[in-house]
Amino acid sequence: MKPTVKKGLLIGRTRYKESSLIIRTLMEDGSLVSLLFKGALRRKSGIAGRIRPFALLEFVYYHRPGKNIYTASDAEVLEDFSDAVSDYTSQQRVAKFFKKAVSLLKPEQSVPEIFDIVLALLREWKEISSLSENLLWSGFLLKIMTFAGFSPTIFRCAICGGKINPEEKSAFSPSAGGLICSSCRKPNDAIQFSKKMVKTAQFLLSNSFTKYFKIMPAEDEFKKLNIALQKFWEYHIGEVKS
Ligand SMILES: [Zn+2]
Image (cartoon, rainbow, N blue to C red; front, top):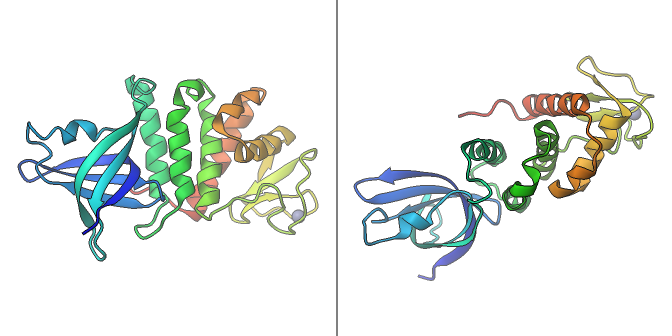
C-alpha cells in the first residue's frame, strides 16, 4: 500500500498503550486527521521528538477509508517556529488561535485556507505578536469565519445588499449577518460601528497579518470590533466545546 505524505500542524498528542502516540493534526488540505505512531516513545525511535508543536511537519501515513485513526510511519520537521513562540505567554496565545480555528472544522470537512491562516500566524508570529490583541483577533476571526462559510458581510449591507460606504457610520448585527447600511432598519442586536471600525474590518479581511501595522492604533474601537465579531461567532457557531 502506497503511503500518503502530507504537511500538517500538531494540535494535540496523547500516549497510547505503553510506547505509542496518537496525535491530532491539522493537515495542509485543512482537514483534521488523527495518526497512530506505534512505538514512537521507545528510546531508539526518535520520532516522538520530531512530533512537536509550533512547527510545520510532514507526515507519512497509510490512509484507509472508513478509519478514524491512520497508522503513521514517519514525521519530519520542515519548519520550526519554536524560537518565535518560546515564551509561555506566546505559546498560550498561539494555542488559543489554533483552538478557535480547529473548532470551526467538522470531522469530514476540509478547508485549506484555515490551514494557511494558522500557518501564516505561526510564520509571522515574531513580527505580529506585538500587535494589539483585539486587532489580531478581529482579523483572525474575520478570516477563518469567512473561509469556513460563516462570512460576516462587511462590504455589502446584510439586509439590502447595497455597498457599505466606509465614509458613513454603520451598524453590525450578528442576527442579520453583518454590517447594515444607514438606510436599512437596524435589528435589535445591532452594534454601532464607527467609520474607523468599518474601514478596519474591511482592511483586516483583505490583508495579511503583517500589514496590520499600517492601521492607526485605536484600541477602544479594536476592542468593540473584536467583541462584535465574538458575538457574531456565538450567534452563528456557538460556544467552543472544550
Ligand atoms: Zn441596507
